[in-house]
Image 1 (cartoon, one colour):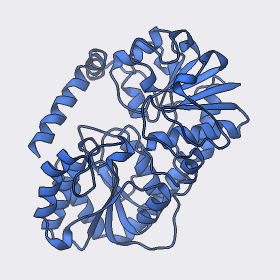
Image 2 (cartoon, rainbow, N blue to C red; image 1 turned 180 degrees about the horizontal axis):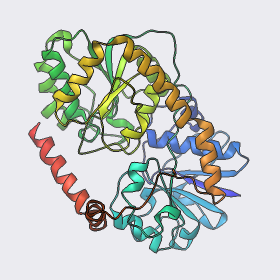
Image 3 (cartoon, rainbow, N blue to C red; image 1 turned 120 degrees about the vertical axis):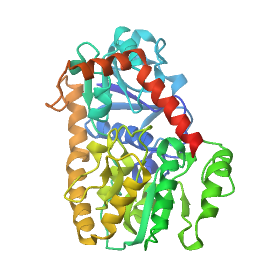
Image 4 (cartoon, helix red, strand yellow; image 1 turned 90 degrees about the horizontal axis):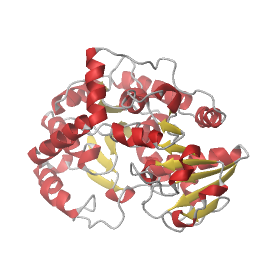
Length: 403
């Protein structure tokens, strides 16, 4: 079997695919998951080609630019969602019947419906949350598979090097919860916690060539308008350390030196899976965030909760304060979280799920099911019309302006 696996239509340049697999290149969770998928399939003896938007050192892979792909030569295409715009497929609409659309970001119901109506073969979502958004699609159980995103194998527990520091992991942008992070940290500072904040992430993970602000954290406008005033308002001992966009090898070190991790504490831009939370837990660290989107599936919840159902910064602040008062419970929760992700998001499990999918077997959880309560009918209607996404977008912009 010959399979094409594609990166997005546009993405930051990658110097080497081998370095991505080895954890030596800073890249988004989406890019890393796609490259690791190609490696899994190649290990299975499948003839794999990767296509990307720019040249890079391919190593043992066959690598092509998107523009140089002849899709007729492949038995199956595993395609990042950016290659379908609702009407036109990058590699030719005639190739849709053998195409698996690899969905990473939430998109309108009509986008997915048009893919299937035009002949698309299957859809893969990284979480039940994301798959459920499209459950009004006819035959969605047969058409939509749920396979989690893998994490880089460099993430593992190490010696107990933790410091009284909490680490935010994610791009420094509003849609990764940075506005909420600033509010949560200000709330903790007012409580005079014995804790420091470090920030691992940068806009370069997602957008190359952006004009950075003086702190070098994100684009100049956002940094000057929001981050700098917040940063200057904090007492010197509580000013955060900006680490920038780190490769997995360096991020592993920073996670293991931290007491706990925060990922995207944002309700109006929920994570669809959150590779960052999986990586942190693979290091036996507790993850704090909100009970929204795919985080409820990727973050382990034990006796000491770490995902808040409240929507105010104070709610998440209270969970972190509770954790500071129960250090042994946090340590135990981190170890259980590590065992959880090493089971549910292991290389072997995701590897087998993809092989089952390619063999035509069902891979979604058995708990999936269609419901026709008034609530779900209303939600399905909003998804079908795109109203729900439009309302979330408007609400998110209003929240961002208010910060």
